[in-house]
Image (cartoon, rainbow, N blue to C red; front, side):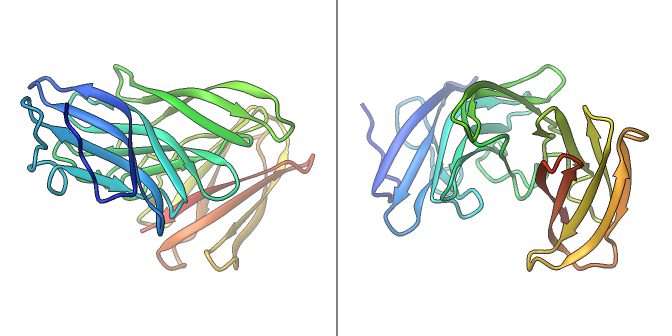
Length: 256
């Protein structure tokens, strides 16, 4: 038996993975009353001791967008040794999907999402229970979600794995929206939507809520629209897409 304290008030293991060399990964959550719970990942040697060459003295914790409760519930390994954790993140109102990718030595893989992190909300409550890597490298998560009426559904979502494409496609009813490349270095990106044939208003705001781009696009004529925010500073921008029926969804694009 092995016990490990990650300097947290409460540490819990939710998933384990045996590595090809016999070492063991354990993932879950580590919490402190002052900061809340974060994704936690520890690697053990074959004799049960903590592998001090992994992460920082054998472990790594990740806070998902300053959320209060982050719990890694599943682990998957990519062919190149990178480690993918999937789980849920609670920021104060509902749980979101959360994925973090690490290098084989336990560092955040900054080529994925934003600083190695992707989080996303579909409908209302999102609970992720499993993650798998497809043969083409894409990341598939499974679990359950609940809408605002309390009705539960099965959740199955797929994420890109290539560099700078970590931001997922998000669902708005039967509409699927994505922005890529994301992050964007030039400020140019493509916004695409599939599953409906109507016009929608598009409003892009900075972190202070100031509008930087406003327009409309008929996705029934073309599923894609190119947008240029190159004249604005680096940072995170919210994209609000609202259909003619008043349904809206906000996704984010990062300008580096």
